[in-house]
Length: 219
Image (spheres, rainbow, N blue to C red):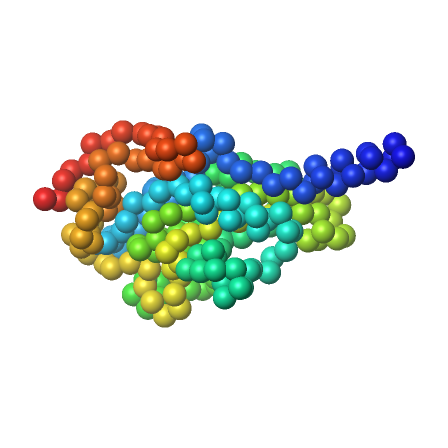
């Protein structure tokens, strides 16, 4: 009986997904902001990213299943217009922000003018998709993904809305930064269009202000 209880506890601990701390949520947004700020050629319509607890919850639900198969949005409508970025790591786990900071690495292989890539640039294109505004991430230990692995296996997912990375379409419009911000985006912060003069994300208890900045108004 004792062995049976211990086994159940061990299985439960392996299946417990992990979500970012508030500090890591800030770092995830900062990693995206930096990558989007540095696009070359410059973007005229790049929107500022925010962190979404709703997307985080969807990511947490998905990584708990320890599968790389994406949900069918026609069946699970909460995943409609949601893009997935998944990251499998064997060995010691890394902080969320360190994984996310690698999403822009394939920029060196991406040709903006021809929307082509020497390899796979899907991570980069989604990260710099101008119309994407929200991201949420979760992580789980999923040894079953690599049965013969001799070290722990971790599955991380970051979910994005609106979904981007459309084939044969450039991720943003080239031009002077913030020169083509959509209606309602009155501010420019770090070469990105913003609706607000503060950076924030929504918690279940309300609005948490993460940082203050002094963007210039586009009016």
